[in-house]
Image 1: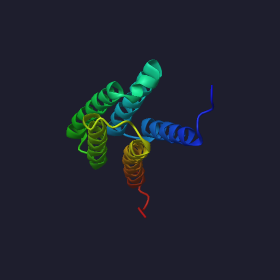
Image 2: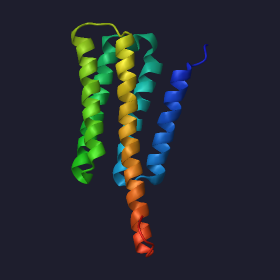
Image 3: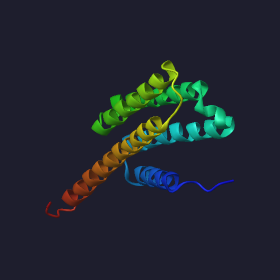
Length: 154
């Protein structure tokens, strides 16, 4: 068994920090968004672990497309409920992810460096949008708490 690469460790750490922050300091929209993103990622990792090397082929791309499409659909419902701009960004990023997988599936292209790079960049961008939404909610709450306490706003 080999040790995970520093990239995998850093992406996983970043992901866990963003999810924890969203659940700790985010509002309902951020918590729902984090739950959807986390669920998608966890199901993807479980599938890759169970199937193993076969997850690199067309079946793996179909499963990833299905999970990404389901995540985008779930984020659409959260967006319609809460109307936060970061949810729209995350949803569009999942659509881009879906398109990436579909191009590789329809073109019968094996996963390569470009796929991994674009997939990881999109993954980071989705989590950055969740992080931005969480920080926005956190600052709105802090501003409301300051104004309720009668403190002058900066």
